[in-house]
Length: 139
Image 1 (cartoon, one colour):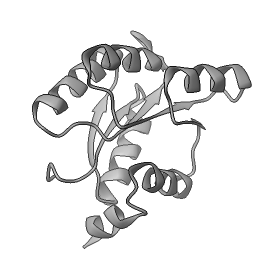
Image 2 (cartoon, rainbow, N blue to C red; image 1 turned 90 degrees about the vertical axis):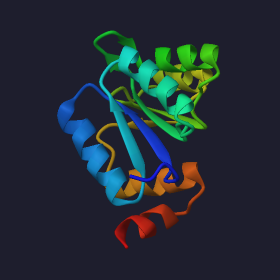
Image 3 (cartoon, rainbow, N blue to C red; image 1 turned 30 degrees about the vertical axis):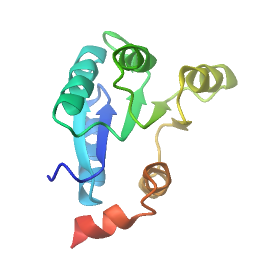
Image 4 (tube, helix red, strand yellow; image 1 turned 30 degrees about the horizontal axis):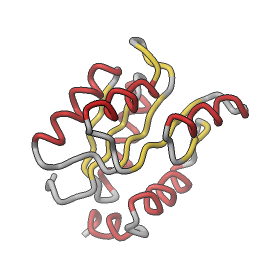
């Protein structure tokens, strides 16, 4: 995919979920990098900045084998590699989790499972492309 496409980082340790998100986002004109751990997300963020294609949107699962998805934001902030927009994706639908994610710098918190049309509409809002990336991706 072209580096000019909006670059999305999916931090998710479920292969099924990350594969589905990759397909959905790539088919709507986004460049997608998947990371299954905090460490892999750190490497992806650093690599994207070094390649001149910084991450525009990070979708962060909170529960990962090597830490919390919000750790990704702390580490990226320390390195100056924060994505333009970060969003938590979690199975925890409670006020404390939402408050923790927003305090960490997430623009939003999505409760899994997230319907694909809802996710795509929100991605369009977060990236400011109003779905236009999706139109390019299908041409």
